[in-house]
Image 1 (cartoon, rainbow, N blue to C red):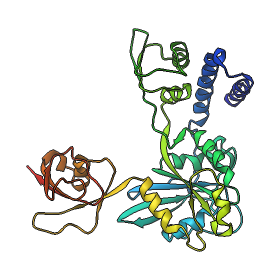
Image 2: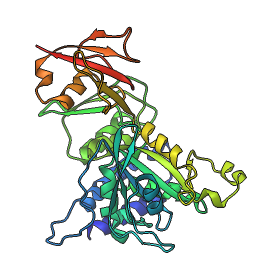
Image 3: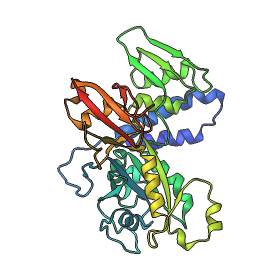
Image 4: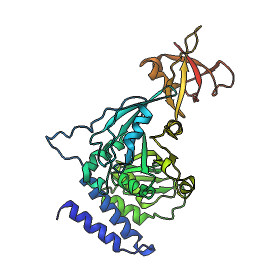
Length: 359
C-alpha cells in the first residue's frame, strides 16, 4: 500500500471516529500518523525537470503573495498596486507563472507576487498547486484574494494553505521539546491543560520516535498544536483578505460578509490606497531615519519592523557596526526627550531618527 493510500485510509478512519473523552487518545494518534504521512508526501522529489516561473528570489523590505482562485482579479490588482504588467483577461488561468512587482510605499520597497490561481486539491498538487503554495510559505504576508461574487471560498483557501503546513494569523505554540539521550519523557505544564494529558503527549511523541525528552507546555494546547511542534516544518504567517470587484455590488451586500476584509475595485482604483496602507500595517514596518553629526537626517528611511532595536539597526547600516557600537542618540516617538542617549536594547518606533557612535 502506497503513502497516498495509507493516508486516505487513516483520514476515512478519522471521519468515522466519534469525538469524545474516550476517543481523545485514539484521535491524537490518528492525527499524528496523518501528519507524518502528509509530511512524507510533501517532501520534494528529485527531478531533472525545470518548472520555470516559480523560483522567485526575495527582494525589497518584505514579500507579499496573492493567493486566490483563477480569475479573481489578482493580476489587475497587482498592476494597480505596482504598475507591473501582469497579463489580464476575463478568463481563468491567465497567469501561468509567478509575476513579481514592487510596491513603493512610505519609503518601503515591498515585493508583490502574483501567483497562478489555485484550485481545490492544490495542496496535493492539482494545477501545479504545490509549486504555487510553496512560494507562499516564504512570504511575509499572504493576501487572500476573493471575488466579491464568491466570498465564501475563504475557508477553502485557508484549508489549502494549512495542507502545506501554513498557519495563518496565529503564533507558534508555546510548546518546547528538548530531546535527551535518556530519562524518558519529563513533561511539565505551566497552565492547566483541557485537551492534553500525559498519555496523549507520550503517544504522539512515541509515534515520531521520541522516547526521551524534556517537554514544557506554557499554554492550554491542543493535540494539533503539539503535532505542529513535533513535525517542526510549520510556517506561521500573517494574512489579509481582499474582496475584488466591489464596485459591482451594493454596500448592503458587503455588510453581510462575516469576516474582515479590504474592499477593492482595481478597475476603478477604489480602495487601492487603503489596501496599500493595510499591507504596510500588516507587515509591521516602521521607518527609521539616520543622521551624521552636524548634518540633517537622510531623506530615505531605514525600513525595520515593530519591536526591533538599535542592535537590529546596526547591521543594516554596516556589517561591523554592532561590534564597534558605543552609544546612539535618538529623536522621535521612542525618545523620552530629543537626542536621548541610548544603548543597543532601545526599542525603535516609526519616525525615529538615530545617530550611532562607534568606539
